[in-house]
Amino acid sequence: MACVVAARAWPEDEAEVDPSVRVAEGAGGGMTGDWRDEARRLRAQRLSYGHIARVLGRPKSAVWRACNPDRAREMHYRYNHAPGRQEAKNASAREHRPRCECGAPMARHATRCMPCNRAAEAALKDRVVTLWAAGMTTPEIATEIGWTTRSVRVWISTLRAAGYDLPYRRPDRVESGRRLGLLQAGAR
Image 1: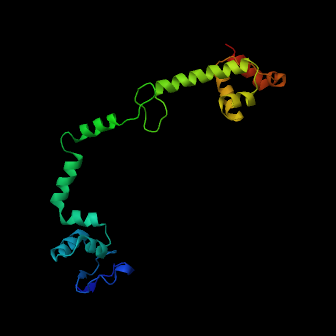
Image 2: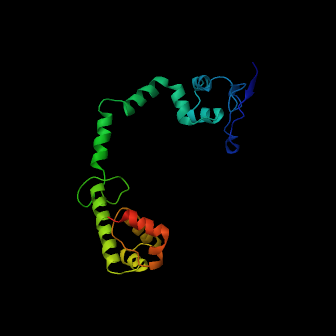
Image 3: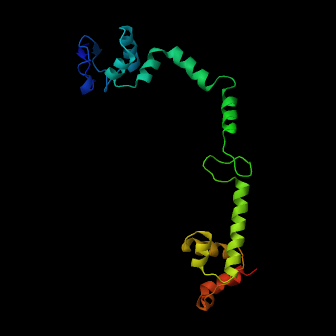
């Protein structure tokens, strides 16, 4: 088997590549054999993990794991499967979990807990129904609650479909067949 000089050096590292370090043909990027065996062979020559990583084109941590499989297995078990590890992680997560204004735990990126969200949504529905009954238009309601006009229109349509009493204001909409059918089906 012929030997070649390691050709997997970065351009800025060319001065660091020692021509006396020879890598078996096929090593590096298009390596046909197991790169782990080659890493162990180079480490036996007392080369650093970083140098072996550059020669083989692998991450330094992967080279370390290949050269120290027992230690890598031990560390993996210690950090991921040791007794009490999962309980400690769960306790830490519970301890650092964000809290709602009411004191209940909530999701990481939420602004309120689920019960508070439901209460706020019910209050918003009641507010929209009250403002609509007071004769306000959708742009006025949007300004009042801080939404876009389109969002208020969609919300009103959703509330109508859910059975809320939100009468149409334009007679031409009430008399059209589609709206008339919706009114008859939704009248409760």
